[in-house]
Image (cartoon, rainbow, N blue to C red):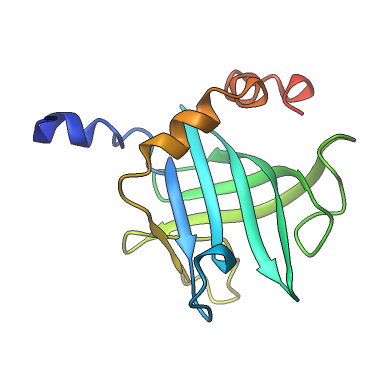
Length: 152
């Protein structure tokens, strides 16, 4: 049985954005929750996103950079075309400049006009299997190594 120090190793302070984050506002159906699954190596953040809208699910990949322990910028995105991206992952990456922020223990992905942090994605505890599965994918290994052209 893991001790308290081992449980903390799942989320080291040097990788504050790493984890599974979920927002289920407005739905009682878990499959309709918005989700980020993020891994972080140094300043580099790589992961997947998904959301449900108008009866369809959308998902894709993101690459970003941490600016501080509380602020990051998403720089590239791909996935099923919808409100997040116009570029399918098998064709390349779309360049973007959108935030990821941590505040009050939650993740936010919107810029606000007044500089306040609006965060509605809550960390999903015990999601080690999801993170390990993502970490094992070749595109993720390339992304965390800074090789975007190989990470499709």
